[in-house]
Length: 251
Image (cartoon, rainbow, N blue to C red):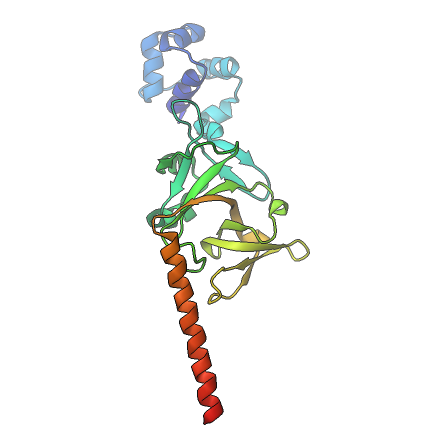
């Protein structure tokens, strides 16, 4: 951990090994050994490191300092870690695919995991923190399973707008994409599906880890075909109910 932190701090402050070794009054070869974990760092050198980089000695010894730069938003309710940027210093959008959902639920607070997620770019997107989620299932038809929802991070649960759609990450339900109503009195979110076959249900604030508001989505099927197919299913269901009523009346 010490070696990783020395290398991280040196790179963060754009110092070469030679420049830092001179500041520490140690040979460059010794600094190289420190960074590779081959040589133990003495207390005097640790004190100098803490002074040069304005960090606590205990943090150099016990913390992974690189994680601090990856954490961009934190509050007592919700937390999001890790973004990445492209060569033009524009924020990438990390993509959580269906196959990665289980891992995300376990590791969304791990910066190294988030950093390794695949990245997608979305042009002319407003400033903010975004993530992409692959949606599976038919609870939000006409949005089909396999669509990718691009979402903006919601820092405060009170900012949730009634009737809008969100990706909710929770301990109890995992990763779900739903239309949301916010009940500030009971500290619960009511989650509703656009597909009427799925009943609404409530989730407690305490169970929620992250909330992401819908911004846009990418679909990989013909939306008109999808709508027509859904309409056809509804008409067939209506016809079946009419037939059931008719049979009941004549029986």
